[in-house]
Length: 211
Image (cartoon, rainbow, N blue to C red):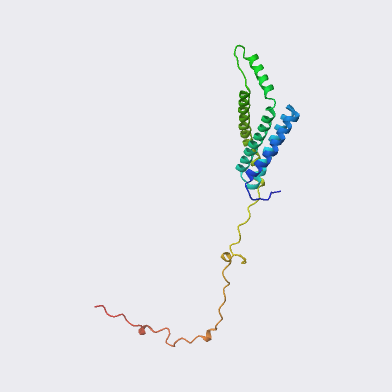
């Protein structure tokens, strides 16, 4: 069944809608289910991004629409998920700093690295930016796949308006009017030919003599 075309920007609409939904799902799963939530979030990520691209291309018939919708959905969801993770880490910043400091002391023997809260915040921000970029690039490909599938379900464009409202069929394509036969006139109604028709040879005028 084909979807009805609607106004607006389908790439932006679907990208924003499914990006927000996916971002909320990722935050909830990550905070409540731990590593299992991450795996479930990844499955939802692939399915929702692909459906966003499918749904967008099904409205326009263009794969590029699904590609952009997938990119936007991945971008919005990764931003929401990163903000949720960042807000979750802020209250636990000291514990995270101590953990990083302990790991640095263990693996970097002889090298002194002092982690401060500002350094930890910068590292977390850099990590989140990398996650956002990687998620957006992955969503670009998934959205293109969904768009290629949804392209075949695009609505058939409506026929252009009839150029002559109220006139059917089109006057430009109407056949010419039928030939009207002339009234039959019997031969007797025509005037008789002269009796000396055709004229005799001697009655023809001779051409003037050449000078």
